[in-house]
Image (cartoon, rainbow, N blue to C red; front, side):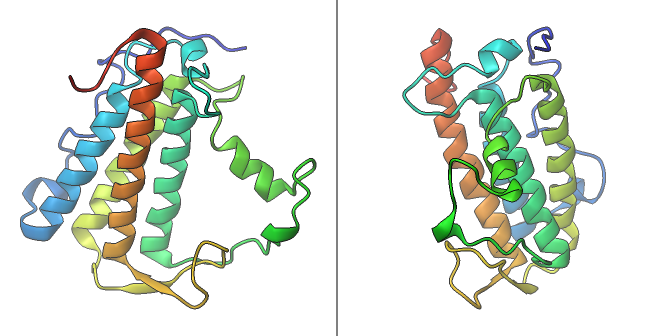
Length: 199
């Protein structure tokens, strides 16, 4: 198992910080979207400050969720939606979700399950750094893409067949996903050592 020093406020400079590039001069809707993204990312990153990798893997509630797993999952999810914003859904794996043998799922499903876990050979610091990189790239897309451009959604049981989302709708989904998981993370962190994002 890899062990590293705790992730601190210094090593996890929050995604709420203004990045260089075209995002520094945004106004109107684009500024509002980027500000909301950064605010909720900041809430999530606050929950992992001053944690060791062992604490980041700790299940402190009845849920399977962990702090390290949440940061990893949100990072990968935001990166996937950023690709959708640029290129559309592409070719998604053809998975029969209703017939999966969960004792021996296909590789794509195992990868999805692992996206919620900080594995033994992974570190919290790595995923915080990767999250900040992904966040900066997403903010640049919000600043530059046509928000009205629409793409077909990937085939999945949780999407209506043939549905489309605009770039704007994908950004709003990232905000909602980040906000939801920041709330999960706040409960998990409070259960570990009493730290709360607010209050």
